[in-house]
Image (cartoon, rainbow, N blue to C red; front, side):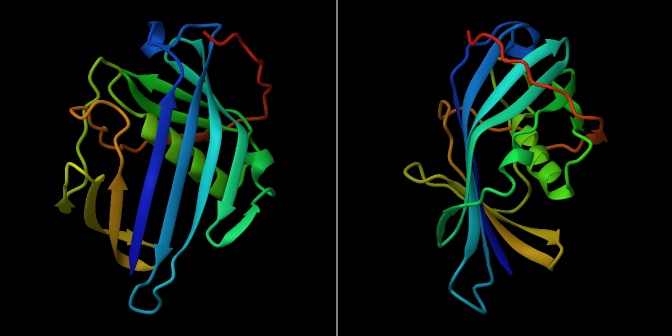
Length: 204
């Protein structure tokens, strides 16, 4: 079994300031694009997959707290040009992360969100988990690496999944300076709270 994933295209529209680069009473907007493809080459040459494209809004309501919300969300399945609309409302519910020393330690979601929606939001904030410094540091899982200056970074690693031990291929396309890297993804807690409202704030 082989899984190919190409995740995360974050194009920043905000500048760094206080509270890990976010000023209170300001709203920061990012363009978020993600896609994932899965398949079993030994059985079929066809792959299935889905894509997600949205505007990611970020606010800093308090120290060491960030609130996220997806807006203008578009989802589609591979070989299906019709957008997947039944989960749009759930995806666009706001969620909160708590930070400690620049690391995400807690994720707070609404009380009516199914597990698959929580997992998508976990994936979004996992990509956000970085050392909030001028330099972004990174290490990737141990595996087989292929690197070409003309191509995105690609590596493979054996990982456990619901289908057993699978060889997973990752393609990482940098969007920052060539010397910058992404940080190792770490685990964090997930808590469930009641629904809350999102208040639009000024965009710096």
